[in-house]
Length: 613
Image (cartoon, rainbow, N blue to C red; front, side, top):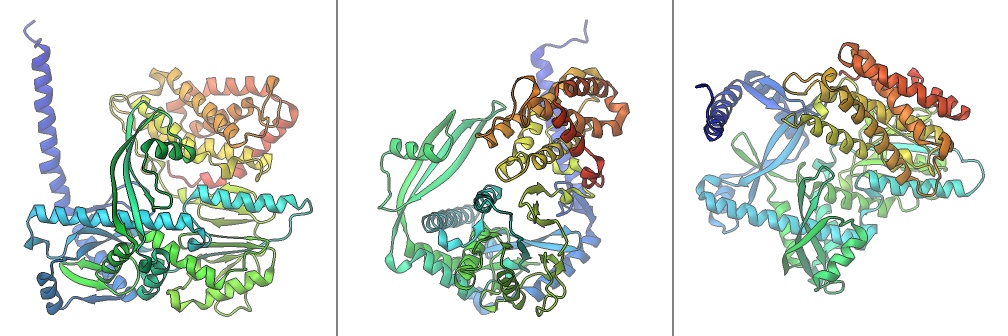
C-alpha cells in the first residue's frame, strides 16, 4: 500500500525525529528547568536528583558559604595580588565551590574549574594550561603512590578500601585465633576527624611531603603511561589509562618484561597492553616545587570573587585522600607507635578504629584524640566517636557514645562483633532511601540483558571476603551475610523491574526473570567458593558445610520475602520459587535445615524494613 516507505526513508525519518527530540530536551526542557531550579544530587539519597527552587537554594547556599568561611581559613585576594597574577607567566588555577545537601546541612565540594581570570586568555590557551596542570597533578599523585608502596610506614595504619581492610583484619583475627585459648576481651575506639581536609596546616603538609619526596636528592622518576583494553563479562570493550612509576633502580626498559611483571600482580586475561609514552622529565625536586605552587596558590572562586585557602586541602581533589593519609600516617608514627600491640589500628582516610586487649592503651589513645593535636589541625567529632568501655572520667569524653554492653560496633559500613571478631555488613545507610536512586540502570532496547548484567556486577562487589571468609567468620555468620546479600539483590531486582521500558510485564516472560534469580544464586555461590579455597563447602546429596542447594534456597527465600510485598506484579514468579524451595529443602540435611531456619528469622533482617522501595 501507499503507507509503506523504503527502509532508507524510514531511517532518515528516525534520524530527523531523534535530532528534534534532542533539540527539544537540550534547548528547551533542560534550559527551562535550569531557569527555575537548582538540580543536584544529595548525600542521603544516592543518585536521586533533587530540584530546589532558585530562591530557596540561594538562601541555603548563603548559609553554606557563611559556615564555610567560619570554619576554613580563607583570605580574599587583594587588587595588588590580582595585578601580580596578571604580570606573572604562571597563572594559578581556580576551583569553584559547590554544596551537596546532607541530612543536617551542606557538604562543601571543590572542583577545579580553570585559570584565575580565565576571560583574559583564549579558549586554546585555557585548555592548554588546564591539560598541563592536570598532567603534573597526575604525575605527582602517581609518584606519591609509588613512594608510599616502597615505604609503607609513610601511611601508618592507612587503608584505601575494603580490600585493604580485609587484609589487615584477617591478619589480626588469624593471629588471635592461633593462640588456641579463649578470645580475650577487646576494647574498641572508633573515631572520626572533624573537617579533616580543611584543618591540616600547610606547614605540616609541606614537612610531611618533603620527607616523602626528599627533593634535595633530586631523584629522577620514570613515568610510563599505558592503556589496557579488555573485554568485560558482558562482552563490551573497556579501556583503562594508567601510569606506572619507577626510578633507575627498578626501571624496566623492555615492554615485554614490564607486562610480565604487571601480570604477576594484576589479571590481564583477554587484555591488550599498549604503551603510550615513557618520560624521565620529573624529579623529586620538580614535583615538590609543583606541590608548593599548588598548595600556596589554592584559590577558590566564590560568587565571582577569589579567595586564597590558607590551611587544609580541597575536598574533591585527586590528591586529597592521599595527602590526608600521609599526614595522619606521620602523626601515628610519632604519637601512636605502640598502641596496636596485641591488637590492630586501622584508618580509612580520617576514620580511626583501634581494637586492643589493653584498656590502658585504649584510654590513652582516646584521651590523646579527645584533647586534639593542634600540630596536625586534628580534632575528632564527638558525635561520631564510639567506645565499648566507660570513659566518663576522661576529660572531653562526656559526649562520646559509650556502649559497654554493645555486641556490634559500626565502622565504615561494617558491623564488627566485639566478642567473636566476626564481620557483618552494615545496611543502615539504606534506611529511608530508595534503592532505585542507588542503582543506575540503562533501560534501553536491551533492558532485560542490562538488568541481568547490572545485578550480577553489583552482586560481585557485595560478595566480599570480609563477609564470606570462613577463616574469620563462623558458618552461621556467613549464612546470615549471604542471606542479606540476596535480600538486597531482591530489592534491586524490584527496582530494575519497575524501570523496564515499553510497559514490559513480568508475566509476559516469567522464565527470563526466574533465570535471572537463579543466576544470582549460582554467581554468589561461585564467589563463596572462590573466597574459601581451602574448604570443601558442598558434596553430592546436598551434604557439606555449605552446599549449593543451601545457597539456592537462601536466594529463593530472600526473593520470595521481597516479591511477596508486590504480589500483583510477581504472582507468576512466586509459585515456581516456592516450589523450588520445597524441592531443595527436601534434599538438605537436618543440621543445615535448622541453620537455614535460624538465619531467615524476620528479626535478623529488620534493618531492611525502612528501605523505601
